[in-house]
Length: 388
Image (cartoon, rainbow, N blue to C red; front, top):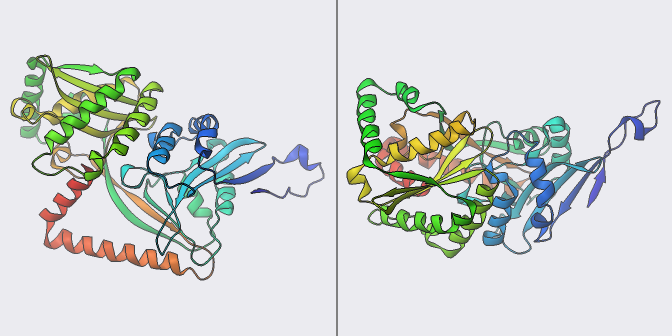
């Protein structure tokens, strides 16, 4: 499907004064593969793009989690050049509709818009969204307040609702000694003692080259399962499809400088592995595994933060993101919190499916508020389990 914007009426030929805008909807299962080169070129021209919008991550997720026949890719072109793109999946179930790729594995959902024409591209993107029937909807979880898709949301002329979603936390990417100034004096002093112990322990930190990423990630998952053996690990992390997706996406991200896998060796033994994702605006601590016995000897949080902070600083990235979750080890650093958002798009006129989904979201959020006030410990446990 392709549509063209009407050229404005002027005294000059349309070809000489106005760009040619076209939109396209792609539904074939290999669309992300055929678009990969153009897609990643657009990533470099979209300042809000994160590692989750990279072609390798989106393609890997679709291969391992997508439902055949359910892919929808929206494309916007300006004089033939790709300036807007977004991939969605059609939902199953009675409410149907569209959702972003990634499900519970993604911390930031977004589309891609070329910075040089972002507002017009967003308007074209919004006009191309196929939400015309009463049962149509688009539900996007984990949207950053400054995400490109916020522009699309602003241009949407149908029903729309915005909700608060998961809290993400951030730290400035500054030298460790400067970071410690954020915390109370006694806590900072204890942290300095722990960091000195790490420095004196003989732990060797190795950055993993792309060809060794699969082996390193196998070690990460093994240590991750050991680490959470007594408290329960996220069931999805034990599946073969998660391991495949982690291998495929991370190997590609490391090869292009958008991720780093750190291995920690002590006395000849692999004791921890950490996956750090990188984009121009921030780095993100995504997943780690550490041997339970290491906790008895060293401060694991300090160990992982040290290498991640160094990597982020060396890359010239200004912020270290702790991503979703409010686990106690994160709070020690007094991070700044910024909640993601959930955006719900519905058609013009009657929109029962979007209304029903919005009502369900409101009910769940009300339940969470009750849980927060009456059973805060249970809420913390559930949030921690969600991120493991």
